Image 1: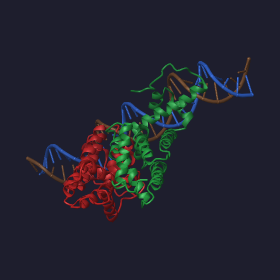
Image 2: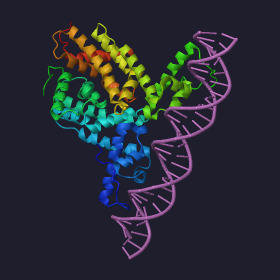
Image 3: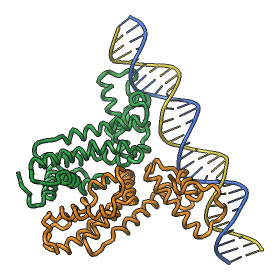
Length: 206
Length: 206
DNA sequence: TCGTAATGAAACGCTGACGTATCATTAGAG
DNA sequence: CTCTAATGATACGTCAGCGTTTCATTACGA
């Protein structure tokens, strides 16, 4: 259930260097889990503290207040996703990696969280879209243009491709209705999406 | 700002028949707005009461408790969406109506709300998917099969079509980044999605 | 070696929200 | 006409959670 649950007999006093680093990460882990499960309003600092084996004292000294903790957790998820969607050379390979990354637990959690709080924090939603979907579409557009030089409306095709790379499986992931796909499933999904967008005929295979 | 904000000099005592009906609807309107904006945990009964021009007394007598109010609001949104996605005869016409309905404020609010609370209420998420996306996919599959008899893997094509009918515009709607499309925009979007799924060539136009 | 920084443990004040109860008032039913 | 049901206005008890503070304790830096 909870891997980092309570640690009742924690030593008191100033922690060692390595402990301090791990502590901060443990707090963010616990915060991410709580935020994903209960949303911002439903998450309690004491719950995070208990789950991370820390105390409110430590959390406040690291993150100032509740919004600070929330933003730090979201920022970390952002970085994870961006690392998983970096460009490559082969369209099919990149598409498959996008499928795997975006259907993973971290990306789905981030996506769900940003949607849930989008009314409260419109800036966060805009930032998410720019750094996430919009950036992925750009990556796909570049590869599409390279592999299919005579394709028109490249950006629109790239957007359709991105939409299909998520598709209903991703919606069901957002709703918590099914687990992440396997690597093989992700590749098959990516191939199918590419074929659909390129018009089944394969339009000018490079 | 708020159309139904406070009504300080409301008459006391038992309301007339028509008043009682309108009151219940006003409470659900206010609850829906608050839930969409702040989520379940962030919504307060007193806030709903103030916004609806009612009192907690009335709300509790109608809906028992906070979850009861939440479920009633979600149920009403569900019915609205289902009314807007009923079957028709023409694929293009039905697809365009799906685009218009699902990009509308009510459907987007419902979608966002269910995603936000999906961890807390998995049953709600499953119910939403069955009554919403899954049902729409079935409607589309029936029309696809009728208009394109030699199309294979009809259900998979219908699912792709549904995904494209939402697409990135719908994701941006969920994130609150853009307004609902116009009727003309929805029709163009539907046509483009159909063309993409049918392979651009138009595959056996009926 | 010694002072300082960072933490644990625990308690505190405060605010806000849920759900209930009381009293006054008015529409509807018999 | 009388009695009841449903509401407004208001206050209340209770509890949870935020952010702070105090004291004890331990690693780190000069």
